[in-house]
Length: 155
Image (cartoon, rainbow, N blue to C red; front, side, top):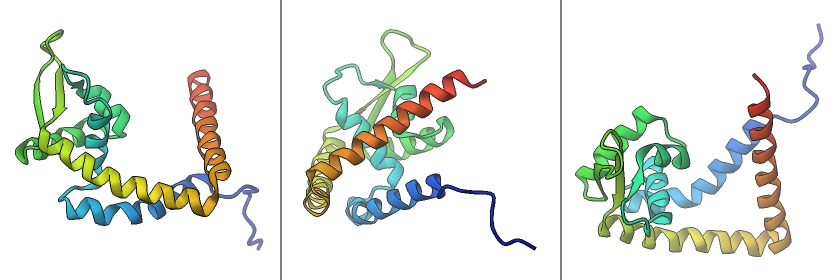
């Protein structure tokens, strides 16, 4: 009986998950110190990136950019609203939709945590070198674009 597998290439999805977990191992202590879960942080990061949008961000966009499914996002937003990190309201353009915004308290957490994250990225840049880190970003962007094109073509 053969013990070899039919796979020629390494397990890319597993490697990407392992890399994510390695990076998050540096981020999670700061998140926990601020009372945030990974999902709450992803939502706050998205809202922080769109803080200049006065009307807020539609929840579908938050779900998409934070990589959260709708039902999970609903629970996360409920807890975040309860904790004073976000505010929700009906979309002024379409009352069937909901928009969210980070509160001053939520944005303060984004500011505080971003310092830890940026320090970690600076360390990675120092260890890997600017060229390798830039190449990694470009390779990941290229992979995402390639797979997006492939999934839009494949039924």
